[in-house]
Every structure is written in structure tokens, then in C-alpha cells.
Length: 429
Image (cartoon, rainbow, N blue to C red):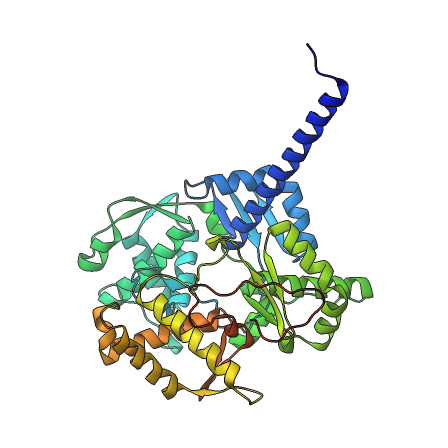
């Protein structure tokens, strides 16, 4: 017997509501995928993410354009979110070598330069290439460039350290799906200069550069000027356009940085956030599912899952345990400090890490008990805490930032306490 009209209407509403929930979840997953990996390809590791991005392409383009002011390009092969940095002088966004899981080694300036030169070499290759071919052509290009010679930049495939640098660069491009290793392995190249074969994803390759201007259009500029000019945009003239630019800058910081501190904002940014902050935070919370912590010192967007970041705290292993203990110690020191800025000498921090290594020697890796091991743990932990914006590192000292106070001794995870009412609590506790 057919259902009553009222029952059919109720079922239709439930179905429509369910469809809206699924659509919202899919869009949220697509945004998370693009923020974590701004270049998605049709390769197996990105296939599902790319499918979601294509499914909601029109909505995603409009959302990214309106809120952070980023352009989303979608083709048959890739999806490229052209992210422009919220802070151009940020040194915590370095590429990490993934070859050694026991330590966090960042790309050096030399590796960045080699990466750019390898990309230029690949641009002139066919659909496939070999590592020896890339090495030879890059070596020749460097040798013939007088500007690189003036900087004493060289590349010699006969040197083991240079072959290792090249492999690090090629592996990074594999992670970004620009290259796919299809025959043999790169370890043999490092050890004995054996060859290996790659397939080039040309659409991904051409999308690697992300800047407002091309580097070749800029001349007579030092490194800092070049970075600024690469992403320079016209200054808006109308109040509406100026407000839109302020919104873009603030949303970018909230999406890029684990914490946005108010004392780092310009006067215009701070005034705009005072009036429009609730609207912005409501949008980010409802659309991308981030938990908001707003305090007197700033705002933190907390990710409910690890998909948003490549840095976890807490994380497993010696480095993760040491970093968490150090964060708790910094938080304790900050809460007890009566000065405007709580500064701690580097030697004092290193001594504390040395004490931790003695206390946990039975559980930490064997090298943690050596002097070099202690220094490596110290460098890794400080680098992670700095990248998470929990500390500020200066030449003579370390300054704990308010958000590190969220980490308390005795807790396995940081507190996720939310604000109640309109109370502006101090510190992220």
C-alpha cells in the first residue's frame, strides 16, 4: 500500500538532509586534501582526493577564491591549489628529507637550488628520463652558468655527497607525483652510479612553480627582494578591495599557521579581525571542521585528525617523546615566569634535554646517550616546536609562546578546552 503523502515528504526531507551532510563531508575532505597536498594528480595515492575535488570543483574554486584568495586549477590530470604564503619571512616551512626517520633534516639552500635546476632540466626532457641523464644535463648546465660559478656552486656526479643530494631532490619530486620511478632503484645510483628510469608527469611538472610573477621577469634583486617581488600584487584602491585583501591575509594565516598571535598582526589586520573575526572563524569552523581556540593572545585552529599537518605533537619515537616533554617544560616555565617575555638560554634548554636523555635512556634510541645524540634530539625538538609556533628561537635564547602552555605535565594529549561565553582567557590553557 503506498505511503501517505506526509510520510513521503518526511522521507524526502531526510534524504535531502543526508545528501547535504554527505556533500559537506566530501567538500571538507577535498579542502583538507588540497591544504595538505596542494598538487594532486591521478596517481593511485591521490586518486580519491582528486575525484572529490573534481566532483565539487565549482564550489571549491569559489570558496578558495573568496576566503583565502587562492586560485584552484583543475585539469584532466591534476588539481593545483596556487597557495601564496601568509608570511613570506617564515623559515619554518622548509622541505624535509624523509630518508632518515630518526632525525628531521631540512633541505639546505644548496638542495633548493639543485631542485630548481633539476626542474629546469626535466622541462626539456621527453616523457621518460633516467637519473644519469638528469644528472649529466644538470651538471653541464651548472658548469656553463657564469653566475653559479661566481657563487662557487658546483655539482659533480663523481662525488657521493652530490649524488645523494640529487636522489633527495628526485625523491621529493616522486612524492609530488612529478616523477614516477618505473625501473630499478635510486639506491644503486648513489652506491655505484647505476641508472634508473622515471616517467615524467608533465602537467604536474609545469604546475610546480607557484608565484604571481615569473622569476625570469625580475632582475637586479637580492634574495629577499626576489621573494617579495615573486608574489607582489597591486595595492587595492577601494575600501571594499582593501577589506577583501585583509580577509585573505588573515584567512591564509589561520589556514597556514598552527597559531595566529595578535601581537604579530599589523594595526589594520588587528582592527579588521576585531570586527570580522567572528564571521571568519564561524566560516572556517563550519566549512572545514576545525576546532577554534580563541584567547587574549591569539587564535589556534585545531585539527580533529592528523591529515591537516605533517607535524604531530605528540608523536611516537624518541624525537616525539622528547619534543612533548620539552613542550611541557616550556609551558611550565612560561606559567611560572613573571617577566613580560620568558627567555631561556640555549645552554639551559640543552642541559634539560641531556637530563631527559639520562632519565629515559632505557626507552630512547641508543645514540640518545651520546653527546651528538643529545644535540640531534635538541635540534629536532626545537625545530618542531618552532614550526608549530610554540616557541620563538633567537640567537641567544628561546622564548616560549603562549600556546605552549596548553601542554601540561601528566597529560598525554594537550587540553582542547573551549571558551565559555565571552570570557577572554589568557594563555592557551
